[in-house]
Length: 126
Image (cartoon, rainbow, N blue to C red; front, side):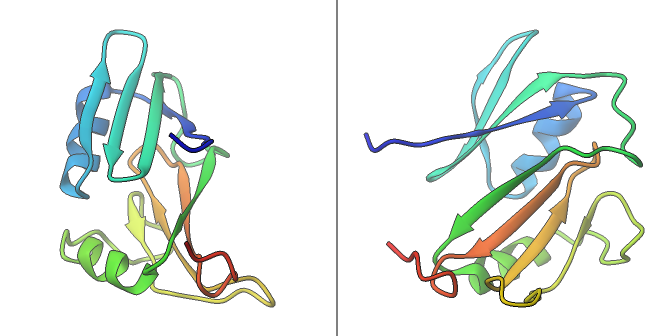
């Protein structure tokens, strides 16, 4: 297995977090009272219990890097998440901030921000 890193994000409620990410194609790889691991292909998200996290002021985030950002966005748009920039959860369209690569953003039900970055635009395609 290649070197890798996985995101560690808070969850106010493992059952709710699991249900949210299952809708996005993630499957549960491990879950007990103190840790949960969800995976979708090479994308791995790990969660720790944090019932006190305030979704409106959360600063937790992670970057997901994929070779086909448009296809992943199209798939996740089928879930029907809000696109309003003030909604939690929410899903944005593709944008390109300055000289940064193309990306879209997902904010989950706990207020964690996932930046989904285009590997090809970043010059990092596999």
